[in-house]
Length: 333
Image (tube, rainbow, N blue to C red; front, side, top):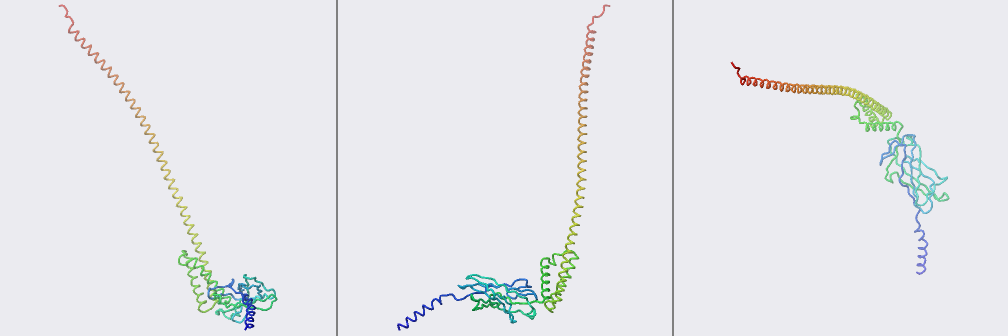
């Protein structure tokens, strides 16, 4: 019994360090598909144009005590093909607690993808080895394990071009609305033609899947819309020029009227000043006449006084004569 107990204690002590050691652990975190892709619809798919370069950035985090030596990162698609970043000749070391980014690039091939209507699933794999390159360990994440849900799609060249042309047309209509932006007759006509071509492009793209025809119609719609913008700019420039000329003409006419009325005002002022001068002259003349009248009146008063004096004198003389005659002694007869 004692031997059994001692043996159990020794076994526990021997296994304790192994239990306490952190297991080899690493993780593939959120990856990212890089441009130039045709479109990326979050939660659905990423689409590349046929024969263009597709790139996936894969972050790898090391949570182990020892160094982590990444020797290979690859993507396995559901058509059973691998796209690989091979680092086996010189593994990349990631220290404990660190994260490094690995980019897997390859040519998107419609031949491999078979059809642009197929959304392909895939897995992302990371292989790391020990310091001597042995004991490889593989980490794997499925396309939807990280919540991104981006399946992989390859568009044909015509489909990608048609998609881009449709997007360009959409941006034009959003920034320059057909119903409100255009005012000139020529521009409105071009916009109506563009709308027709864009509708045909949508029909070819979404109904018949004739991407070549869709591309042609969308490109025509874009060209017509740009012509409409140019026509509208010309129309506005012409209208503004006419308005400016009218304003200048009106301003000149208003200036002429102003000068005319200014001249009349000046003439009226001169006439008023002349009338004032004439009135002043008349006033002076009247004043002179008044003074002359006063002088004549003064003379008249003098003559009147003299006359009165003479009258009084003659009257007194007459009285004296009468008195004398009355009192004169009668002669002796």
